[in-house]
Amino acid sequence: MVAAKLEVSGVRFKPLVASVHITSPVTAEPGSFDAWQKGVVDTQRDLENFAELSEPAAVVVAGDFNSTPDMRQFRDLLSNGYRDAVKQTGAGFAPTFPSNILPGPLLVIDHVLIRNAAASSIRTVDVRGSDHRALLASIRVPLDPTAP
Image (tube, one colour):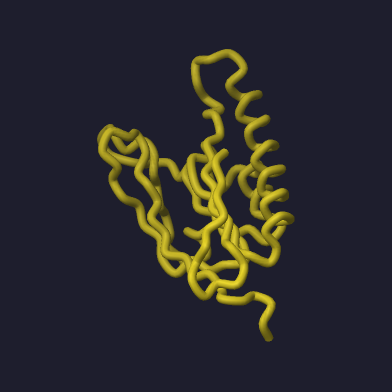
């Protein structure tokens, strides 16, 4: 996972932005499901660490979770104040995979999770050379979440 704290003019606490890529649970490789489960556990730990290290700043974690919204393991990641941007915006069904075959994306396995921030919009975008569509989110970060 890659993460960075951003300096945003006027924002008191630096937002943290991170990418995630959890191994697919359904590959021909032996042990892929176990590797996926470990990836979910590691991501949960990372989310907890980001929340602790960044409080009260905003946290945005986005990428290929290789998990659909109805999977318990993914829903378990939506704790400690994290929310799914697609659900928060009411964007509905935002399939991202596979994008390189007809009829197009059928699965929602890429996500944007936010904490101490609000997504105002999100949409999928074609990415040349990828088998995933990207998620493009607009996110509002509070200037000072501690101000009354």
